[in-house]
Structures are given as structure tokens and as C-alpha cells.
Image 1 (cartoon, rainbow, N blue to C red):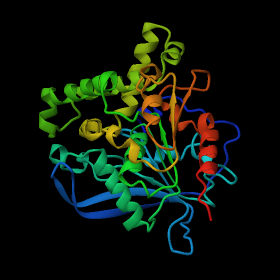
Image 2 (image 1 turned 90 degrees about the vertical axis):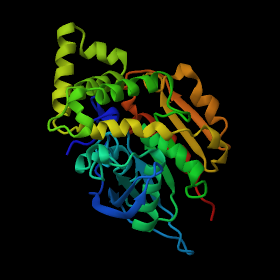
Image 3 (image 1 turned 90 degrees about the horizontal axis):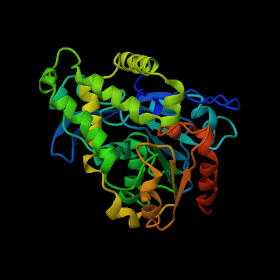
Length: 357
């Protein structure tokens, strides 16, 4: 399965030499019955697929103490965190999220991976979902499905980073710490909205989309995938790897051909439209847990010159913003999955947020 194809991992991964082995994950499905979406739609059964590493532990009062929720980016899945560049840097023995110490939960968001999604059969009749629906499904998976009534850490990449901002204000007492990566705590707007809108319009205005009931993937899927290729890395890397017209065309063609093998157009459309209800700004002051927000200077989706990350994170009572300068280690937006770049900030956050006995 290649559900991790997009945004987060659209670029070559760095696999540092010191990456180590981690325990094999366990997989499962949690069924939420009669799930009602913010849009008013319902599903009699909403399936949330997940992977866990480690064992849940509780304190003397019975409260969970070591659960770590990690949420993925747009059109991704929990599998994207099992590679050497992420799990190999974080989940092994003695590493920051050592799976012998922590209970790590990697869910597939609504509409993604092996969770319920439009391509399962409902197509465009699948209920419209948003980020708040996705957070609620994650919460119910943790509490009702896995028995984790508290989280040591909630973190996420890209869309998952935006989920972390919402988690902090919707459930401020639930977690000890928050780590949103490659995201901004503000409504999707400007260039970020424009590229998403371009993809959405290309699909919805494509006659071959047929209201979502196409027999073959519509041509607009190609436009969508090409936009993802454009936005996922930085200009220097693209120029280095594709320095001529012919090589750029070849790179685009190869990318589209590979991703089109497993990408469904309705799933992509819904995933991009899900950000319609993301507006964490009014609730930033409600976040109580220590929070470190990490972005990257070469991220085309969240460019640092906007100044939004620093300005808005300052409204979080215990928040701190970090932007890594452009350099050889960075890979644009997808640097969020290269833990070797930023894991020392995670170590600091875990130390500073350690619960008192």
C-alpha cells in the first residue's frame, strides 16, 4: 500500500546512518457507530484504521501516562511514519519516542489510508468531513478504542500539524505536550488556499469527473498530482534534480505515473476540501500544554516571510515557534518527516513537559 504518497513524502527521504530498528507495529480497525459529521451527514459505521507500537501504561489513578498520538498529512496515512527517516530516528531503543517506553498511535485519518473514504463505494455521496471531524474520530479511537484517556504527546505533520493545533484548544487538558510540524495556526488562505482551490476546481469542473461517479480516473487527477509535485519540495532541489526542460517533464511524468497507481481522485478532492473548517486562531489562548511549533524556511506551503507562525504562536500561553533555516538537510515541506533535522526540539519539549510526580 502506498497511501503515504503525497505532500509529506513526495520527495527523496534522508535515511541517516544512525537510524535504528523499532518494534513491529500492531494494526487494527476501530468502528464508530452512527458517526455524525459537522456537516450533518452520518455514516452507520465509520472505520478508523490504526497502528500501535508499545504498551499503554497507567498511573495509580488509572490514567494513561505514555500515549503518543502522531497524525499524518493530506492524502497520507500512518504508514508514512514507519520509515527509517522517522521511526528509525524516534521509535528505537534509547531514542526520543522509544517504543518500549511509549505507546505510539498512528491512525489513518477519515478519508485516508485504510479508514473509511469516498473510494470505498459512496464516491461523492460520502459525507463531507472536516478537520474537526478528524480530530473527534482520533479522540474516540484513543479513549473508546484503545483506553487512552490522556496523551503524553500529540504531534502531527502538515495536516496532522493543523490537527495538533485543534487538539490543544478543543481538549486542553488531554495532553502533556504538543508538537505541530509544517503547519500554521491560521485559516488556510493566500497561496496555500490558491493551490488547493486550483486542484479542487480542476476536479469538480472536469466533465469526466461525472459528479464523482467516474468509471476511470478523470484527466484532472493529473493536474492534481502535478500540483502536489510542485508544492512538496523546494526550488533549489527541483532545479538540481531536474535542470533541463526534458528532465523536468520526465520527472513529472514519472511522478504522476507512480502516484496514479494508487491515488483516487475523489479521495484527493475530499482530503483537500477537508481544510474548510480549519481556523484555530480564535482558540489559541485556550491551549494549556507546552507547545513547540516547527516549520522550515524552504517550505512553499508555509513560507516564513509571512511571519504568521511567530506572531500566532506567541498567543499560546506556553508556546514556542522554531523555523529551521534553509540548508542541505532540508527538503521543503516534507522535512517534517525527516526527524533527524528536528528531533532535538522534541527531546527538549518532552523534558520541559515531564509531568511532576
